[in-house]
Length: 323
Image 1 (cartoon, helix red, strand yellow):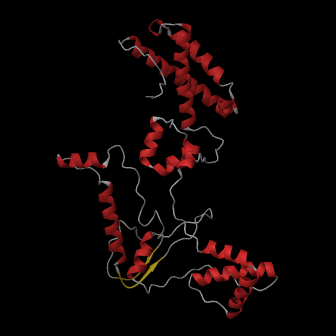
Image 2 (cartoon, one colour):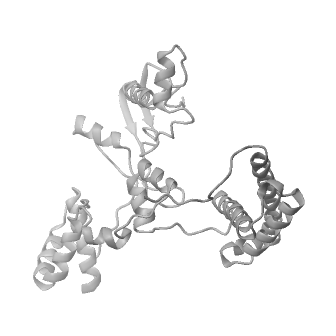
Image 3 (cartoon, helix red, strand yellow):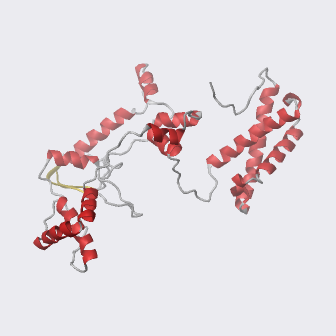
């Protein structure tokens, strides 16, 4: 019988195989809270309105389902995890396995990976082979006497390289505090930021540091994303108001025809810049840009319509937050 962790309710099973004991799968990694966060849900629950479970409830339910599943078999329990995904990238085993090993220290772990047979050839290759044998020895495998003698030989002959390799095997990645000097190099004395960046910092300070401190970026794909189109629209709207300001034009007496003419002119100008080369790089993207131009024009007409029939008067656009 095959079953899902959340739905399996079988009992009286002699042997159970649990597949996919990998990090993020068992237990599942939680998605974002949704439109209503946990605080909202708790408040509604107190007022008699019950919605979907909160993040904490979902975690507790997952823990219970795992406990229930792992205690079903009467005779044998097999736990399986993958060491790599379909693309060959290494993936970690579930944190649950470490907990289970602490509870059951005699639990046996086996792998279907065939261990390499190491051979003694020339000095350079054998030195590397000996280090790999030593690595396996540290992981609990037995070491042949000939490799033990070879390691002693290399310890005396290649002291510097040997010590360097051993220190690498014993290395633990302990996080250290960033020095003040390095912080200043990355961020300067005055932090220039935006609302979006501050929201990003609140969600994940590490992500903020990677993105805006170390400035790490993913390899960009040759495609138009929501960020590209959003930036394009923002720039057109910003330049539109700047144009009105420079020409001293009154927005409230602007006709639709004039709006269309100004927006078209701005769009044509910024498409000439290298930043938006993607928008005109192929017939497909040119067609998408043509549609985007219509959306921008429609948005501008909505904005102007709203301003015409209200007492609201903008005194700035794309304003930076400063002291």
